[in-house]
Image (tube, rainbow, N blue to C red):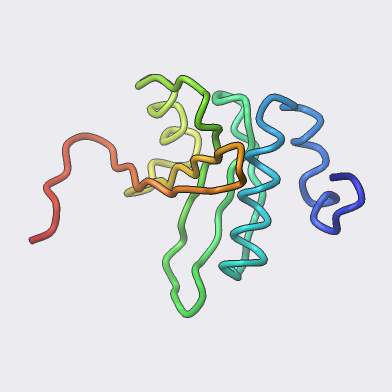
Length: 118
């Protein structure tokens, strides 16, 4: 991991939160290299003991937030509440769930009860 070009951007958080390092590293590479997000920033979310990302999908102006986690982690409602608070109460957050085979599934989370679009 240390020899990968993206390691430098993530190094402080990888060392601070080693339990979340794999999900952080995998999600960053997916967003920056595969999905080619613009203005991708690495953020510290100490309340959730991990890093997160802020950026824009290609050809969009919407600022989006992504928090990586592992499929094996247990997350609580207070964890999600702290994440929304720390990230400035965005309308939604994407949870990047990483598996051992390097698959990533993104779930869009909104605070409260949100009616799905028709």
